[in-house]
Structure formats: C-alpha cells, structure tokens
Image 1 (cartoon, rainbow, N blue to C red):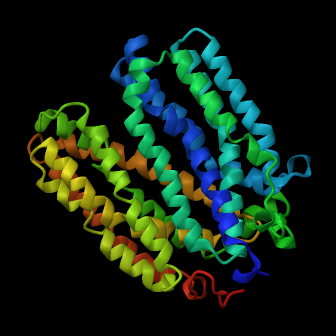
Image 2: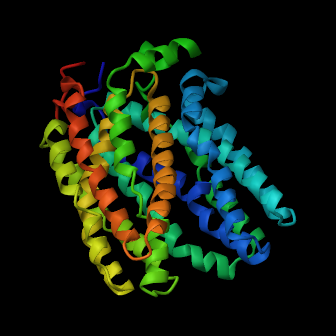
Length: 418
C-alpha cells in the first residue's frame, strides 16, 4: 500500500536523500578517482595509452555486473538492519581498501587490484542507496521528484570531479589522494545510524518488499514486463558514440584546443543539465509521465547536433550550455521511469541493472565512436554526431511499449496499478 503524500514529511525525505546522494556519488571510485588514477599511471608509472585503457576497462568490470549487487541487496538483510546494514558493513570495508592503497607503494598491479576491490565493496553501498530511494519513491508516490533529486545531487559530484581532477593530480600525491577518498567515504557513516521516520517508518512493511528466494527473485524480475522498456530506453539514451573519446581527440587534434578544454566542456555540459532537472521536479507533479516522456525525448533528440558546428575550443564550451539544457528533462524522466518500473522487493536489482546497462552503453558506444572517428580523418567526427543523433529517435519507438497504468499518474497520485 503506497503512502499518501499527506502522511510523509517530504522535506525530511528530501534532506535525507539529497545529502546521501551527494555523498554516495562524491566518494564513488569511478567518479572521484577515475581521472586521478589515469594520471598516476601516466606520470608516476609511465604507463602507455593501451595500458591505461586496459586499466579502465578492467576496473569497470564490477560496474558492468552491478545488477549482482542489487540482487544481493534485495535478498540479504545484514544483521537485520536492511540498507543501513550495508552502510555499516561496506563503508568500513571500502575505507580499509583505500587506506591500504594509501599506505602501500604505488604499482600498476597494486593500483589495479585496489581499484577493483574498492569498486566491488562500494557497489554494495550504491545498491543499498539505489534500492532504498526507489522503494521510498514508489511507496511515497515521489518517483519523479526523487528522480529529479537523484539527477541533481549525483551530477554535482561528477561536475566537481571533472573540475577537481587536475588540481588533485598536480597537488596531491597518490597516498594523499587515497586518504581524501577515505575521508569522503567516512562521511557516509552517519547514514548507517540515522533513521528518519518519513524514510523508514513503512519502508519494509509490505511482504513483497522483502523479496523471496534467489531463483524466485530472478524469475519474478524476468516476468515483470515493465522492466524491458525502462532498461532499453536508458541504454539508448546513454549510447552516445562520439561524446567522449572521439570528442576529446577532435578538440585537441583537429581543432588544436588545449587539453583543459575537454574537461571544462564536460563540466559545463553536466552543469547545464541542472536547471532542467529541477524543472522536471516541478513538472512531474503537474504532467503525467506518459506525456513527459514524449516531450522530454523530443526535446533531447537534437542535443548532440551542435557538436557538428563547432570549429574552436571556445565554441565547444559555448555549445555545451544548450546541449545540457536540451537533455536534462529526458535524463530525469528515464530515471523516474526506472523507479516506477521496479518490481516489488527488487528495487535494488532493477536500479543496479539500469546502472549496468548505462555503463555498458557508455563504454561500448565510446569504443564504437572511436572506430567511426578513425574511419575518416576529415569526416569521422561528423559521422559520430550523425550516429548519436540517429539513436535518439529509437526511444520514441519504445515508449508505446511501456505499460500504460505505470505512467498514467502524476507524481503524488496513486497509480491505477496500485
């Protein structure tokens, strides 16, 4: 039974999940340490480009299998503390890994093993967070507003990581960098004990919210028709050949921009999503998702087209603003859809499955985009832009397959399915 809007303290829910989202994504190894570790490999260990790319591929393996962490979260209740138990167990474990990395001599094998272990341990923290926010979003009829909150407060650490990466690499030693990760991870500890009533009072009361056996959970997930459009739409949205490595090479090689332009572009692009994330948080209480999904997708379809017209690094920075503004509504709408599509008791599994698909889409499309870019010295990047733009309309073909009752109600209204 869903909680009615009047029976929860929404301000308390926003405070809890806003601060938790910020900290979880701020300390995530793939955000905080991605760029600094590549500089460690390049500048301290004199690694080659193939070694760096292989390092990123291998350290990303736990993220490709993130649905496993979700299955564990939905089926295992550590110490009877549910999601807070994961914080109590895996925050200290992750801190231990980072401390070991800070105190040991830097080496390629040690860095590789440490990052894989840290990402594995941290995956359970992310699974507990993702499952809990999806569960409360469903029960409190706040999937749209919590999607907007998720989008905003997960983007801020990504933006900070992009802008801070150069400073960290230039001014902090590898050991100091890992001690910084220790401090940020420890900041999650209070959430292992904080239990606000509006978040936890009825979070696990529904018997269906407790899951079943492993095989039963997998069977129920596979049979849940709503998950397939949500997973496919998120895959298509993040399948962007050309947005990362090809753009980086295009800016530096073809346009002769400085190395700093690319991270600045990413930071501006991500920052420009924020106003439309907030706009979605307002509109979702007025307009049902069945309309918002169409509007947001149509608004987001042309977001990569400006890249075809950049002829300088400064113009790329300028174009990043409208690109981000065009894409924010769609990104928030697709997270909202994922939350609404979660089967009872399998919120962690589906949200982490979506995370796995997103990571596969990003890394896989980046490889494809690099091949397209290399296929033609003169027009390779233009072909990448065409490929990215051609993928987005496919989302419009998937929207009609979403169960109608799932997206009929605005945020705060009971769904016809409940």
